[in-house]
Each structure stands twice: as structure tokens, then as C-alpha cells.
Length: 123
Image (cartoon, rainbow, N blue to C red):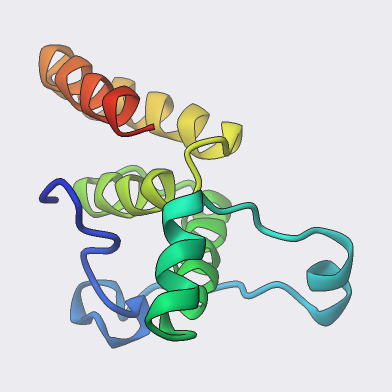
């Protein structure tokens, strides 16, 4: 994913690569009890451009919940995790699952360190 992109797909539900994943959206009770924290950049974009970003946050995390429950570890999950981290870098669960996926997939840790450097510099 290019630096500065918010999501690799405007909406995951429109992405053919994830058609086999059934997103788990928060219930009304969950929306009231637990708000999804987002970065200041996301709030800025949300306020300046449209409500589409807010739905992108909800959409990305609904797909994250689904792959977490499925216990899927794949390169497409890594892309989803990048989107979720960019939208909410303070989400410990996303970072933990990324570590698990990195280990399981045997991905290049030097490349991951460069990714982490970029995230740190953006924060």
C-alpha cells in the first residue's frame, strides 16, 4: 500500500478479493458501548470530505473481525491489517494479529521493520 493511502479499497464490500469473507459489523449495542478510535487524520478527512471515510473505518474493522474469527493468515489479511493500522494505529489487537501473521507466513522481517519505521514517522 502506498504511503498516504487510507485504504486499499474504498469499501471492502466492493473488493472482489474479499468476496468470500463475511464481515462482522458491530451491533447497535456495541456501537454505543465501544466507539472505534481513529487517528486525527481520519477525523480531518471525515470532517472535510465526507462520511465515506467513517464507513471505511467501520467496513475495514468488520472485515478484520471476520478474519480474526476465521483465524485466516494470508497476504490479503496483511493488506487489511495495514489499512486497520493506518486507520487506528493504537489498536493492540490489530498489531498482535499482524505479528502472528508475520510469523505464520514467514514474511521478511527487514521489510516489516521498514514498514514500522514509516508508521512511527507518520504518527
